[in-house]
Length: 132
Image 1 (cartoon, helix red, strand yellow):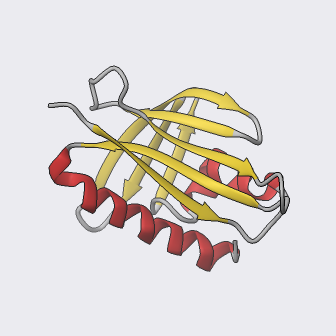
Image 2 (cartoon, rainbow, N blue to C red):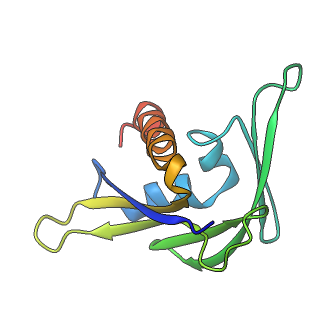
């Protein structure tokens, strides 16, 4: 089944791409707001939700592209469609100099609202842990 592209724009309360880059491109940064545990090995990033003593959900994503301080693109290991990726991009407003986090993801039509809700919850966590 063909996945549809989802784009979410999240304004950031900073003008420093360094701060947000650490939160979207490192295991320690991603662990603060996307998953309970994140491990990186070469181009593979493993995300774990749940505690070791409970049922866990573990998914691995491979890094497809990195443009430092601008974007990082991943592909989930279990997604086989060619154009199926998820990406976090830092965009700077020419007018204000403020930054925006642009998230691109793909989902089946039935899952679009679920995926958008999941990203909104993650972005709420990002705001709580970083103030951005």
